[in-house]
Amino acid sequence: MITLYDAPRCPFCARVRIVLAEKDVPHEVVGIDLADRPAWLYEKNPVGKVPVLEEDGWALPESAVIDEFLNERYPDPPLWPDDPGERAAARLLVFRFDDFSKPYYALRRGEDGARERFGEELGFLDSMLAGAEWLSGRAFGLADVAFLPWLFRARMQLGIELGSWPALDAWVERACERPSVAAERDLVEAL
Image 1 (cartoon, rainbow, N blue to C red):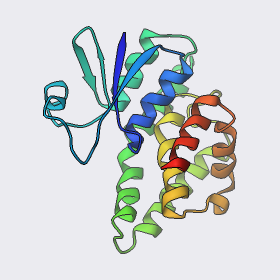
Image 2: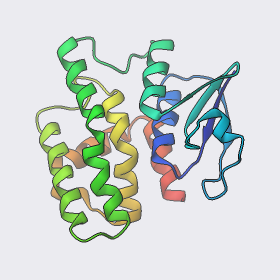
Image 3: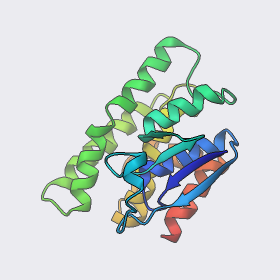
Image 4: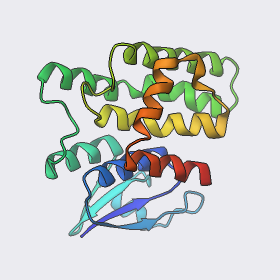
């Protein structure tokens, strides 16, 4: 049985929760209090972060890596496009996620200019979605999963209204039609 070491407020954990739900993978959840991390967590991930996926004593940290692993281990439904060019473009978005997350976390910390910098990143995603239904290509996939948890938190916890970015706003609403994504949205609303 797979075990997910998880924290509900963690958007990185949300990525893995969405993928596990998309693939309908049976698993157990061990909740981690991020304010009081247990010492044994550092045995599973030396930096003490969640998520960690574990099976038969083998532990795998880092959400993007876990999602790739789950997509390969449980190929249906596929969460990367078949087309190599689309797949490479989607992977590039995940690879460049730090460009998006740095201004997001700066905004959370209340840094000067962070709202504007985060707005620029939202504008970039909006431009990517202006001609596409999904960040991952023609179908929902791991590039979409990589960004959605932060957008829910930006809207619900930081008061970011997405109306200024209509393609982005429509994408979030479209994604919420998926039970895996709606469950994450509902979890964030309850935080």
